[in-house]
Length: 276
Image (cartoon, rainbow, N blue to C red; front, side, top):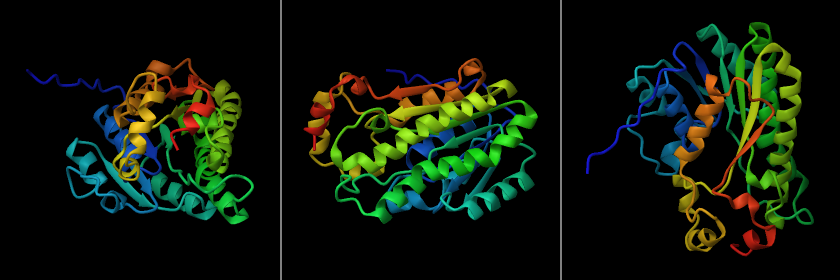
């Protein structure tokens, strides 16, 4: 059987995309897809060698090198996006390298399993809020005036199905942070819409990244019956929606949250909780 090669029209030629948490996992897949569409990429992560930590195979020594192999420019910026000072320094570096930022994808986040509200420590709560909601706010603020002045730009925030409805008690802090991202997205979309800037979000369900699969074990088998499409998501499933939101295909779409979950969001929370 002949392998079908996917065609990537150069919809993003001449554009610059900044992607946080892009040294591995979903962020890396987003970076590579936008590079294939013609964009130059800024790869941000708290550790630019994060792929090695989870044994995620790369086609080159770093994600930046993978992007350069695609014929695009790449800048790696190691920075903690929960820090206001670090975010300011990162964007100063970006604007010293590139004349503009056309696309921002706030992918950095995480921190599941910190415990239910009754047992979660204040420190754990604040850390999860900073890693997810706080980092998204800081990076949105860093580009908002720039995009408003240029009267163009795409901001894509990464929420979760856990931010749309409570899945299980132990996800409460994470769910609250991801729900906050949804309201931040809609508020910023309302603010920037008159200036031609689109602000949207995606809400992934269970997606089979190298890191996430490594900790699943038998849980993966338990999850599948509760996903109507009968499989875990693939990183490319999310990347295709990112492509839609990052390109001119979505020029009249703003303030939206697109679930990428195989229909999982339509299930009752009690069913999803049984998987754990």
